[in-house]
Image (cartoon, rainbow, N blue to C red; front, top):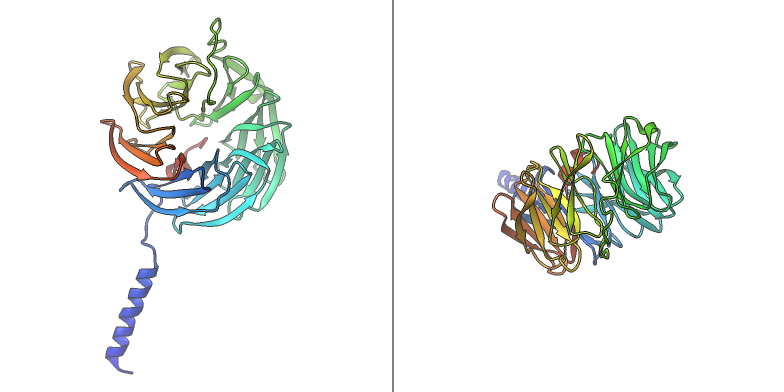
Length: 385
């Protein structure tokens, strides 16, 4: 064989292989932007603030949430239609998908990353799946709509049940035979909840009464402690246009910053003695109160008619430091792992806006179709996310 022909054949083969192979990359700066109206997600990277790919065919994402595998390669997307979808972030494709119920509201992944739990409205309860294959493992019926699910140490899942007013603790260390280890009374109509970053406490917000329910996961047998009890006593609440979210994002140092239901306030809870530390007046009814990773500031978005506004709260002074207007219908905020950027979704402007947190200046704007939740792969290393 002609040596020059062999050489050229090798060169051409190497070129074709290189052209067909995606560049090697890690997943530490990747993330997912949910496009709620089109059943799709955009895969993004935060280093250069750009879009990598778009993945379609995920069903009803009107109230979608996402968790990540322990190696941060895979995203598990929970759809409102009961769909559970596993996406490979590096290959930008669906790896597995199942419709596991008629109406779902989120999920969690176990401490060891082997089990995905889905919180269901219909039928009420949770279902457990193998994280590698999405094969079903077990179901736990709860007698009502499951909300505020989070992972806890020991491959446990903690959640609230809206109709019964209970908090359940489920031990899934034997995932085919999970055990309900605790059912405690929380209060009237718990609507959301979160596990603290250290995995010790679960806090449930109550829609049917003023206050929160605190459960010590080291001693769940002691039942709940009521905190911020009656914070609106003697005052008529405003109409609630959108339910606020808890999910632990507003933990800043010794304080929790929590949206008040039906009020233009952010409540500050001191986690040392679990007493109210302050109330911060804000522009409207808060939906998300999200703390920068360093805990210096808390960013807040709002329900109608103030849903085009984001306010930045200073943790030291406990006052509003900045008011921003990213776009119409701001639905979610997500910080990069070290907090130098915050990504903000504007549904009605079909855009995701990136801010420099040091200056509060806009540094990028990416197109997206009706974006809602933004979830970065760094969540893979966080308890309760």
